[in-house]
Image (cartoon, rainbow, N blue to C red; front, top):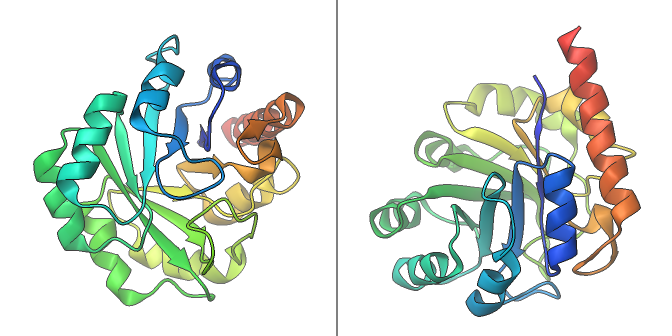
Length: 219
């Protein structure tokens, strides 16, 4: 099965246009404190000419459900990604306020997926696996120990899609897909020349690597 691509940390319309041309399923914007952070007005302008075939994801930190939902509506988001260690209760509260998909991040600082994360796999539309950093919510460029996580992910997996983030780039995404079989691969720093500034050659190389892996799986 071909993993879908999410290009995250978008700040320029030309990068979103290329993402669509490369067949990305999702583009992400950051509303949490970050070098890539934008606000709702900027996001709406950024998405203004973008294809609706590519779903729009907003990444949020520690805000209340009502504020997140209001920003999501103003920005015309399809997906809200809760990245600041969301609880099941926060997912439930946001689902009552927002009609789109809800993704919940599980940030890992070891080789195991913590047991409490199981409930997120049960109630979220997708679970994002990312490397934990005390300084940044995401976009750290740090990879996860894919092989060590394989058994836990097999046990935890339910109906929620699995989104693999953390240090992905063209050179390692095939190994990550082969090891964990994520539904979606999520890349930000691995396709950049500077935070928020996408390198189009790196974007193409990443999409090509994912596509080649999918073609091999289809044979």
